[in-house]
Image 1 (cartoon, one colour):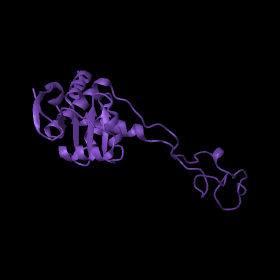
Image 2: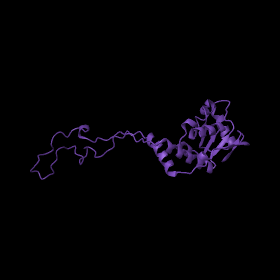
Image 3: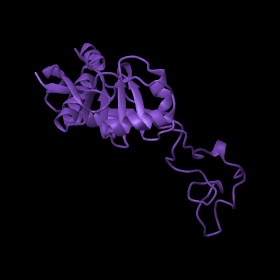
Image 4: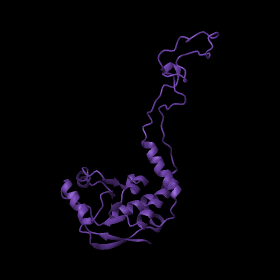
Amino acid sequence: MPELDILDIKNKKVGVVQVSAEIFDAKIREHLVQKYVDMQLAARRRGTAKTKSNYAEVRGGGKKPWKQKGTGRARVGSSRSSLWRGGVTIFGPTPRSYAFKMTKKTKELALKSVLTDRIQNSAISVVDKLILQTSKTKEAVNLLKSLGLPEKTLFLLAEKNPNLELAIRNLPRVDVLLVDGLNAFDLLVHDKIVCTPEALKKIEERLN
């Protein structure tokens, strides 16, 4: 079974935790990870782009521009034809949802792939406790410095931590995520993932 060092808030090793090989040493399926990320980004799209794609939506064009025959010009029935300036748009975008779904099993395989990749690249750190005395941003900054964490860090928690959540709110690239909301995009977009042994245990419970 893979092992991870447990650190204290001063970045000193205080123990070791074993993690499930089924989750943190799984086969990496890149195509499922890509599909999972695409699914998340597609769901975020507003899908509100709109063009005037039928005659009912454009103003004017009710009168035939000129007679059918005898002018030497094309037989036009409306000045709001898609060929004319100010006319309707052919195959233009209309409001729609871009969201699509994946099965529960494929999402779990994608998450296992991401967690395995993160461990292989030393991107997961385990801290024995993530306790802040106050909710001041300064205290969160000191925590990041003492643990030697990069600017883009994700704190993965087993349960809510109000002080930590409030303290990092003003740090634009630092985020807090509960294990219940575990997803591929957040795991990949951050350079470092910090969690507690309790969070690791909850991840294993969720993905087993």
